[in-house]
Amino acid sequence: MSADSKPAVAGAARPSVLSLNINSKSALYAAFMPLLRNGGIFIPTTRAYNIGDEVFMLLSLMDDPAKLPIAGSVVWITPAGAQNSKAQGIGVHFKNDESGVEAKRKIEGLLGGVMQSTRPTHTM
Image (cartoon, rainbow, N blue to C red; front, side, top):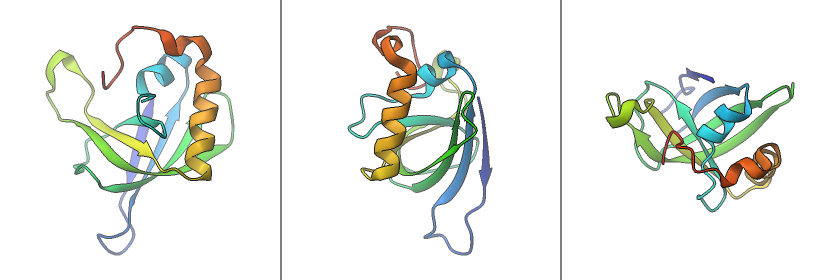
């Protein structure tokens, strides 16, 4: 799993753009945040964010060549040096719009029964 952060274009009010490639079901399980109402995803990044910051991501899932464009807001922050060697990054709650609903549906479809696992994730 890798994420590349690109600076926001002209002005602090514009959301930052992140690109995230998830290449395996285990990485998707670790990053997905199913307890959020609209679903969400953990994005490893060293860039500083605040709760509530708006972000826009391009999400690539497994072998699908299509990138999912998803808007969301930061609801989780794992700082550098977090306990249990958790990866530094942010949890982004998908917006309740067509792209967010589609992303959640697609991720849940890919994960299937794995979602009932008790394995630890990046956030819980």
